[in-house]
Length: 365
Image (cartoon, helix red, strand yellow):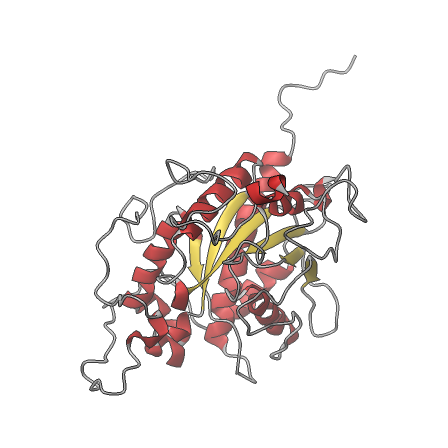
């Protein structure tokens, strides 16, 4: 039991400091091994949690409610927009087709594996399962909910589930596998543990394994993979954050993320992040997804997400998952596909790092 508490994600009910029970906070944020730290805003630095609070932050309230006051006039409720897009995206049917071809034709640059395994990792209700279903919807040609999605405060996903993205004919169109796991909880007995996260990344956890905080994965676990090959491991980790909750996540979650990132980096696995539910914090983006990179509110939220993760915004991409819609939207598809393409680029860096580099001339004796 002592070993379990050392690695549990979640706030200890007996702790007054709000820290996590599995270790001390790191002195510095974990830094990704990927080269380049200049973010997309051109600042050249990673945003820190000591920044001045943005004008739109209201203590104790979700971002989704900041502009929902019925007493506010249309003028005071207006959300400021930037004059130009802070990231360039081509919002066309042609761009969607091009991105679909890029993702569909993807093959890992390593002969040992045929598919890149991407682990989605985030708090409860961050939108991990919804992202998987949304990506599947794009390739299916219709909105579908392949990954089961819950709406409670506890993690709906309890086990390791791997999803191969299929096309309209039911065939696997690409070398991509999205892996869903139990969410990081806000209580000592509700979330995934550091030990289990690392076990998944190392390839020890069998498909369908049901997680339990008080029963960590070990060699005696049914189906435990003792000697995982490269194809069993995770090749990229995508952290998932809910944009409407970024300002209200527990303070200790930053420590959790940064400790996670340090351990994952030690395994040589690259990390990116997805900012979901952007339509809940910006009404202009909710109406037209192509306005996402003109939204000052979304840009500021991405800065805060970067501070929470200890990650440059150049690794973070916003997405809008399909939820209540019945039909696909081109702009939403472009944003989702751009996120997948972003993830695969970093997965391929892992394969490049894992492939032995042979130098020198081969001599015929």
